[in-house]
Length: 93
Image (cartoon, rainbow, N blue to C red):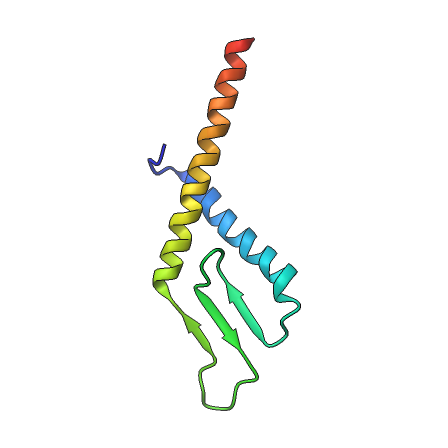
């Protein structure tokens, strides 16, 4: 079930990007001076207004890894569920 495959990796990246975009569109649009990327763990955040010469963003590689692992598990479970449903449907025919 958790064995790596190109399909699972593609779905993982797609879910990570889609839900990060969805969060940004829904909740992020109401927060004008902050941006967060990553669901459920925010691995990148930026805020402002930022004074000149200061870094007003933050990146956490561990949270990115946790995000990727979370979405990989979700994609593996979803694809396994879909495969079982289609196999069960073929048996009923």
